[in-house]
Length: 504
Ligand SMILES: C[S@@+](CC[C@H](N)C(=O)[O-])C[C@H]1O[C@@H](n2cnc3c(N)ncnc32)[C@H](O)[C@@H]1O
Image 1 (cartoon, protein in one colour):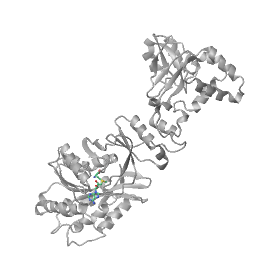
Image 2 (cartoon, rainbow, N blue to C red):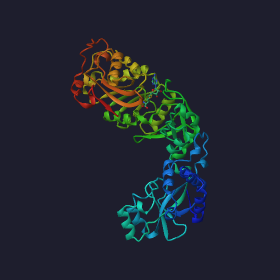
Image 3 (spheres, rainbow, N blue to C red):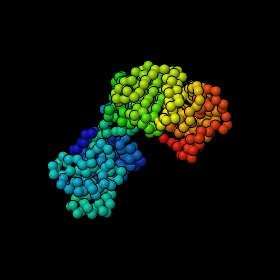
Image 4 (cartoon, rainbow, N blue to C red):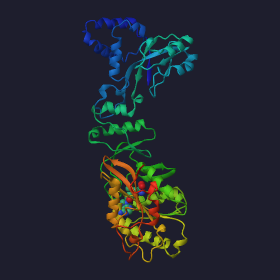
């Protein structure tokens, strides 16, 4: 921001006035607007008392206000290649000249009247007088000395300050505008300019709409310029519908390097964002599940990604079996276990979810739920976060184990994710799970609303203890009345109420 200051004399103003005499009354505001624009590069300060002699003063204020004083120049509209210089603009700001030694005392009393605009100094040096300072005032509130409130005027009087307001030409540059202001000025009028993005380390991950695509490189660059630490902006170019849940992306601006490092809930994860799944919006869900486990518990993470459930849970001194089919996720999962010093606690697999359940999970459950299980104090949890498909994998638990069921309290708790577009998403997800298992979960499940993914699309997590009738071979199913005693007890518990949905 450059602040410009040069005397803008009465003679010049008179000249302006005489030019304007030929204009019709209705053109007065317009004439002033164009004159302001004309002189906007010719900085000046002039006292309002001088200007008060001209009848057009109120119109200046009105027209400046209407054209949004602090928005970028209108000729940036439609720009597709970022030209930062085109954002220069001069605005006229009311200022109050005060002795420098009283500035801090006075500022406390002028909070209402002072300019409140992030990035613009409220007190600047007076180029004409070393001993004075200029206090920038709010151009929407402060026009003449009558704009001061009584209390403000009395403080000014006490401190022997002349309440006369002068005007100051202030040059705004690209740096002074917020990203949303820049995009609103550039993109077609009336169109949505959401400047939001997901941050993944140094990467801003955008999800641009069709009307924003002609401006995609500019939008990416603005995100980089306006967000410290962001050095790359990418746009998703397909929906996440591939097996590994990563998406194809286009680098809009900045570095091509997608190798990144993120912190989530105090753990560090490194990965190549173009090759694995990572969603910063799941951090609350990761910690919600982590909270459910106690030291000594066992976790099977069927779709583990790069480790955001597995690592914090292993850190709680739990034993973790973490699996992912994507060789890249598997590689970074191993790496992140080492990075967070839990590699001794996590056994990592690179299998299809069904093979993981029917192989390593089955083997471990045989041990966990075997004859000695009665002495076992810890719980077993199975997390299945692949919302588009995880429900289909529930079938893999059917008749997984031989022998006699252990007591039902020791049976594993499943936390299975799904999407729903239904008007009653909790009921819908419960029905999806019931259809996959072939039994009713009415009395023994709870559904947690994780997040809203898109309009009318929710991500949910259904939690239930796997019924012995499902897990063990040769069990008779009572489809209607299946109800585990421990869950029956928990039904009144808010966290386990099948009726209630908790919103993350
Ligand atoms: C939605 S991501 C969840 C990752 C991680 N749990 C998280 O919360 O960030 C699902 C993961 O499942 C993996 N995946 C997809 N299909 C799979 C399958 N058939 N078997 C095992 N993993 C699979 C993907 O590679 C991806 O890492």
